Every structure is written in structure tokens, then in C-alpha cells.
Image (cartoon, rainbow, N blue to C red; front, side, top):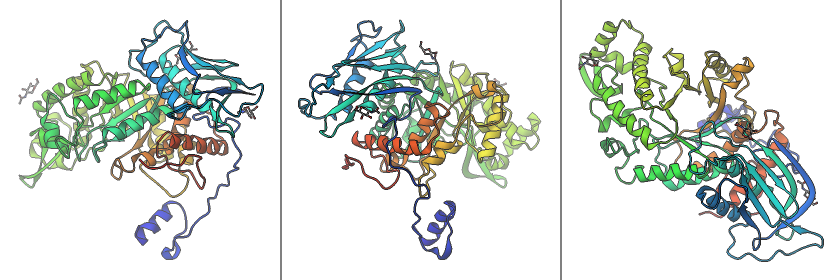
Length: 548
Ligand SMILES: *[C@@H]1O[C@H](CO)[C@@H](O)[C@H](O)[C@H]1NC(C)=O
Ligand SMILES: *[C@@H]1O[C@H](CO)[C@@H](O)[C@H](O)[C@H]1NC(C)=O
Ligand SMILES: *[C@@H]1O[C@H](CO)[C@@H](O)[C@H](O)[C@H]1NC(C)=O
């Protein structure tokens, strides 16, 4: 870090910047290092009742089984896969399981966890949706524990919670207390945005983050898959898009098999995959493989050789979009696709004489937002015909484009007051909305920035109860300018965990001290599970990260 950058960083952290000398600042917040009464639970369940009765768990005899009454039996691959995963997490994946030691007389042992899907349709072979029921009830009693959930989605969350209740005693053997948990999410849409265009993210990195999302009860992977710098999505209809537009046509692409694997890996963890194909701006990489898609920019009266946003005035654009989104709608099973629509730069459109003539003909005057709306309107009609719903960034709403009533408006701009106003406006117009503004995790500062992420609340704006209900959740965004496979995971975790609790737990769960203590333990648990989640502050973990 250069001296001036350091000075800037200090300024941004509201520290004084005298003499360009780095002053080590002690953390202003003194945390009490007492354990939370909720142990390491994260995100905090809606209702928990602990008792002082502790039970042993033995890796030799403990089993996770289907309850006899369950509507999802041994044929439910999703559950069987989850049982194995959580068994490994609980018993540390140890090669050899030693019999329980350090047994005090009178200690009873928990023999099994029975998983009981109560609804007639378990959803075992379905994809999760925004309407999926994610609730569960967990009862840990003497000798058996029962996990009841209407659908497999709640069972997945319940298994995670069960694994979080297990702790090691002073002899290193596993214990769990007699406990009841009754839980459901506050918001239905709890997402993470990863950007695979500014840097290519290897498959392994994406999968590791889906795994970590499940540990935090996130349920949407917003895949910002393409953008200006590169086009790594391998399209079967238009293979030249990635051949010409990816950083490398073979090593830096997501093949149809890769995409399928990501979607299935996510499904098995109750996570939806919503791809974003952002247009008409942010499309430079599209132009390399699809000539005539982008607007030629002019320098005076001749083309300058550079290109701007998607060309909205030629029919070929819409023919292309129709074919492209037909493919997308069949590749990605989710009911929603994100269509972007943010940050359209009008300079190139302004320079182009054909566009100028079209503006005149349409009576748009000099208002280029009207041209943008003209494009988006046609795009939305095209995507609407594929039977997908769409999400869009807030600019599309701000520019007054006519939207289907089920459109989700994604708020990302401004300061606190501005995003709160935007949330109020979007919901008073009757649209569902998602918040991301306070959760741009690509912005990093010195200190515990998770606290500001934790304090933001998507329903914190002026509006009626009916408006508040239109808020379906939020997404933490990790844009990729300075992020690739080397630093993505520690940058995202546990900072995104703060967002996870805000979106899952009750709105009154706001005690930052309690959160610090639980999150520290949750962070160490992620580390123990092999995830290089960065520390919150000075501390240690019983099992430190040992590299890969
Ligand atoms: C679990 O039980 C032990 C042993 O009785 C007790 O010391 C501990 O406080 C209990 N934990 C919780 C979270 O209630
Ligand atoms: C989920 O199912 C439970 C139990 O049947 C029910 O009480 C709850 O209202 C459902 N939640 C949603 C979001 O449908
Ligand atoms: C573009 O399509 C419209 C509507 O289908 C049609 O009226 C128009 O003639 C077409 N323009 C060109 C240049 O083909």
C-alpha cells in the first residue's frame, strides 16, 4: 500500500490522517469474551430451548436415518447425500472413529437423528423456489432426536442446525444437549452474488462457496456470469460468444456440463441458481463473438472502431436475444433470470447518426433513457415469452419501464437514505424488491466491517406493512475487480455470514456482542470444515486453517 493510498484508507475508516503515519488503532468496541447462551448457532434460529442435559454422540453408533413416517425414503438422493455430509462434519471426517471416552456414569448417548418429511410431496427431486417451505422443528431428546420438516429444504437447514448444536467436551468427545428448535427464515430470498466475468472463478471455488452458503442458510446463488471483460458462459446456440469473448476459449469457460454440475450441487443444498445476463450495457465481451450486436460508436462522421451498448435499433438484436434467452431459459431451471439493466453509458449512442435518426423518428428527443427503455421493454417481452420471471437492477424501474407485476427490483445504489427512499418507492408501486446496497462486500475497510452489514435491515424504510411484505430479502454482492480464486473465500466469509443472519433470523436479533461471540465460533467451525474464513479480530481457533 502506498503512503497516499494508506492515507485514503485511513480517511475512509474515519481515522485521522496526520503525517501519513500508520497509527495502529485499538478496536473501539470492547467485546465481552463470554460465550453466548446460544453457543455457536448461526444464523440464530427463531426459537431455541436448551436444557442442561447433555448426551454423548459416538461416531461408531450414531446414525442419521429416515423416520418411518417420512414421505422421503431411502430413494431420496438429496437427503442421503446430506446425511453423509453432516455425519462427516459432526465427526470431523476422521478416518477412524474411536469409542466414546471420558464417559461419566449416567451420561446417556444419543443413538440417532430421525428425519421426517411431513408433507406428502417431499420436493426431493424438485428445484427450490422462492415459495419453498424451509421451516423445520428439531427435538433432541434422550436417546433419539427428531427433525421434522414439511419439505426437504427445511430438513437441510435442520441438519445444519443439528450439526451446530454438537460440541466437544474436554475429552474431545461429541456432546449435544437436550434441545428443541423451531425455525423458519424471515426472508425467502437470501442471496450471494459472485462475478465470473471480471475474473474467472474455477468450478472448485464456486462449489466451495455453495457449500459455505449452505452452512449459513443462504438459498440463492446470483451468478453474474458475463460482463464487459469476459464471456465465460459456453452457449450451445452461440458458441462463438465464449470462443471469442472468454479470457480463454477452453480453460476459462463454463461448459454445459459445468453449469449442470453447479445447478445440481446447489440444488442438493437447497440453493437456487439465478443467472444474470446483463444488457444493454456491460456487454463489451458479447460483441467479440457476435458482430453487429453492439452499437458502433462514431468519432465525428465516421465510426471510431469502438463499440457501445447493445444496438437497440436493429431487428437482428432482438432475433439474437430471442434465441439466446430461449437457451438460457432451458439451461437454468429457476423461475427467474436476472436481466441487469444497470449503468448504461449513453455516450456511444449519442455519437451514432443512425441512433440519432431513430431517436427523432420515435420522438424521443434527446432523452436516451427512452431509448434504453425501448430496448428493455422489447427484451422483457422476449424473456416473458420464455415463461421466466425476471429480476432487474433498479435503474430499469427508475426509468419508468413497464414491468410485469411479478418483476423483482434489485436495489443497489446510493447511501442509506437514498436506498431507503428507493425501497419505499419500489414497494409503493407494488413491486417485490431485494436489497444489496449495504452489502457490497467487495468494499473492504480496516476493522470489523461485518458490524455495519449486520446492522442494515431491508425493511428499515418508511412504508406500510403491506409495503414491507414486498421485501423478499437481499443479496450480498462480491464484485470481481479485485477478486479471484485466491482471495474470494476469505473475503466473503464470514462477512457474508452477517448478512445471512440478518436475512434469516428474527428482526429483533440485533445484539452485536452476542453476535460477535457466536460468529467467532461459527467462523472457527467454517475453518474446521476446511473453509478459509477470515478472523473477526484477535483470537484463535481450536483447529487452525492449515492451507490446502
Ligand atoms: C449443556 O449441558 C451442559 C452440561 O449440563 C451445561 O453445562 C451447558 O450449559 C449446556 N449448554 C447449553 C447451551 O445449555
Ligand atoms: C411451512 O410449513 C409450516 C408447517 O406446515 C407452516 O406452519 C408454515 O406456515 C409454512 N411456511 C411457509 C412459508 O409456507
Ligand atoms: C424490423 O421489424 C419490424 C417489425 O417486425 C418491421 O416492421 C421492420 O420492417 C423491420 N426492419 C427491418 C430493417 O427489417
